[in-house]
Image: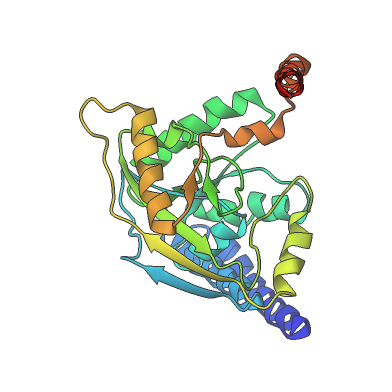
Length: 281
């Protein structure tokens, strides 16, 4: 099946590039039509990607519409979450800037749908991204904004703490729950151990990518509710719908090493417990 899947993806890229390049350059003076066609073409190439995995995706609930002052948030398992959602709706997504061919796609094709990129190692990027997000949600014709508030890929068994940025925008939050069926393939992408290219190859050589996507009821911040409380309430809704366990961990912890002092404290606690057990015997 791998040969046929590569053929499907190749045909998809040929159709996409032969259409996207003329649309992008020849319709530069007709922004409304150009944006509309680019949205459709981005959805199309994402559909080819899903087809190359023999993707079986069931969507539940009303399809997102383009409205100002709303943001969509979803649990995060892999960068393919974006592709699975994008084939139905041309979301503008907030995403880490990647190197290589993925970075090239980000800076060219995906910017056409209003995506916003950041570099986690650059402190100044946070202020810039926060400003761009606020400007985007106010736009009348901008694509729906999609944020993965966990900030990192998680194994689809847990949801880690949501960052509060998406819940401080004074706008409606639309939760999306994504659940993959691990019987066919584990869709989790561990970016520290595997490149995205190898991750795609693993998906293309698996049986199928099977998942459910739920567009859940929009939520607004309640009177007196803090952004953190709002984020936790939305995380509850997503976790319950997807059947995923909530854990009180910060997803960014995987990008940093614990301090030697903290390690020594844990080692001392463990050593003391072993010594007590020996004394009791």
